[in-house]
Image (cartoon, rainbow, N blue to C red):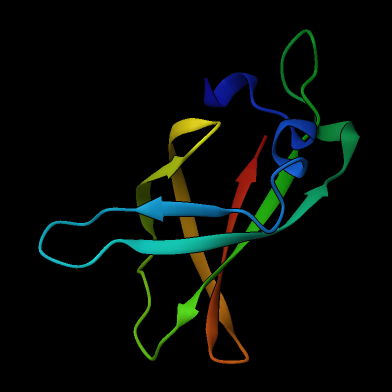
Length: 101
């Protein structure tokens, strides 16, 4: 499913929560904060999916997730396994980015 996901699919869910369940800890909710289209000249495949990035905000915490593939659950989109990269904090919440090409 990830290879067919587009920025339009995710843009409809900005400010909604995506849940990560890790073993031994409480679930972590990330808020989809932004969806940004990137350079269309780098489109991949015959249909040329336009590359895009998504940004999440984590909960207010001094702890954060490491760069890794995480299983995110969303009520409408289902389960998405996404490689997240921490970008740095914003008002006490860690920002995470994923890029789709």
